[in-house]
Image 1 (cartoon, helix red, strand yellow):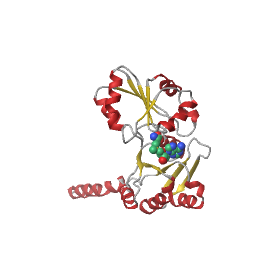
Image 2 (cartoon, protein in one colour; image 1 turned 135 degrees about the vertical axis):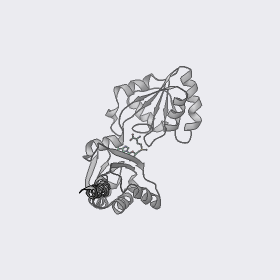
Image 3 (cartoon, protein in one colour; image 1 turned 30 degrees about the horizontal axis):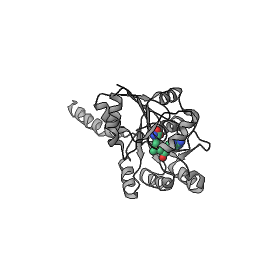
Image 4 (cartoon, helix red, strand yellow; image 1 turned 90 degrees about the vertical axis):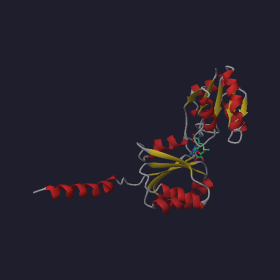
Amino acid sequence: AGVLYVVATPIGNLADWSTRAVETLRSVKQIYAEDTRHSASLMAHHAIGTPMRSLHEHNEEARVEELAKQLRNGDSLALISDAGTPLISDPGFKLVRALRSQGLRIVPIPGACALITALSAAGLPTDRFCFEGFLPAKAGNRRQRLQQLVDEPRTIVFYEAPHRIVETLNDAAQVLGAEREAVLARELTKTFETFLSGTLADIQAQVEADANQQKGEMVLMITGAPEKEQDDWQPEAERMLNVLMAELP
Ligand code: SAM
């Protein structure tokens, strides 16, 4: 059977293609892309002439059997998204799960991913982090999601759309606290790449004061809540101490 290669593409800088990604896309029978028109220019850049078909959130499930059939026929295929790593806030999860359950082989070709790129240069703790994708668009739901993250000790990573960044910073400052350290990474690997860092209040002020900071693609990273372990441990320690004291002559 053929192999489905899940291929990462650049998140801005066209030089970030890996040699293996380009070779794989050239060698497969067909490329499934989120938006074939968008990807056509990327392919042209590297003289990749492989035929392309669409695979997006609205036809992903309907495409499963078509891909399975080709793979069983011995044809290898590739899945790409508009930018970065497929399945990461992008289509492909249902497809990969379905094909894997049929025993077909899925091989990742790693490359750029905005959240990892952002974390790698932000200077926030990276030993543990959680990725929250996009916050809900509706204000009430967004605040509720943030509320659920109040005690999250790991660094929290969000993707955000430029037209919502002001509102999101505002809500994050109110719900998580204006003094939380954060970094807003914008336009990674592109000409206007910017990292804004400081407290949520600092970042909010900088973004509100400069309309340019409200444009482009962005990743918001917020430090986790201070660990509460100490507090959880204290009552138990006190209880034990009292038990021991009572036993002393
Ligand atoms: N699959 C992609 C990945 O691997 O990162 C993410 C796709 S998601 C639909 C698009 C979001 O990723 C953007 O709204 C933005 O939050 C983030 N993003 C993508 N490219 C970026 C870049 N060059 N700089 C900053 N954020 C980026």
